[in-house]
Image (tube, rainbow, N blue to C red; front, side, top):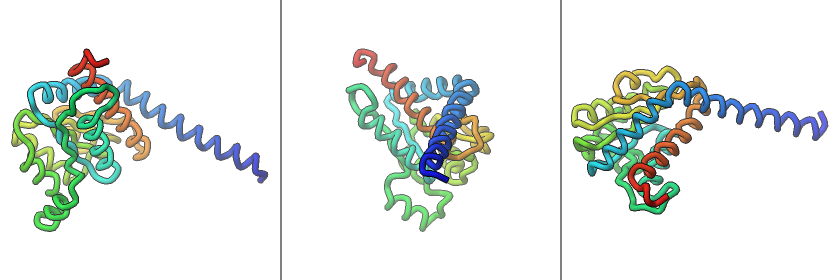
Length: 201
C-alpha cells in the first residue's frame, strides 16, 4: 500500500468517526430534545432559587462532571458571576476515604449526604445508566429533596427510571455517547446563561 493510499484510508476512517458522532447527536436531538429542555428548566429553577448543582459520574463521566462544573463556576460564553456547582468526583481525599471506609458504591451517596440540600440538583452521568455508585447517589438525592437529572446512554439503564429527568443518548457506543454528553452539557450551559443573564449576551 502506498503512502497516499494509507492516508486516504486514514481520512476515510476519520470521516466515518465524525459522521457517526454527528448521527448520534442528530438522533439524540430528535429523541431527547424535550428532556434536555426540561433538564435546563430544572437547573435554572435550582440556581434561581439559591440552590447548587452537584454532579457525579465515573471515568470519562467524572471528567464530564468536572468540565460542566468548571463552565458554571467559571464561565461558558458570557461574562457573569460564577454559579454554584460541585463535581463530586474532584476531591481524591473524599473519594478514597469514603471508598475505603464505606465501599466504592457509597462514594457519591455519602457526598450527596454531606453537600446536598432540598432545592439543589444532582446531575448523574452514566453512559450505561447502571453505575451502582451513581444509582445510590440518586437515591440519597431523592430522600433529601434534590431534583435529579440523568445524562445516560444506550437504553438508559436503571437510572432512567429513577431520576426526575432522564436524557438518553441514542447510541450503543460509549465514545459516541460521551461525545454527545459533552454537546448536551454545553447546550445546558448556554440555556442557563441565557435564562439567568440575558443582559450579558
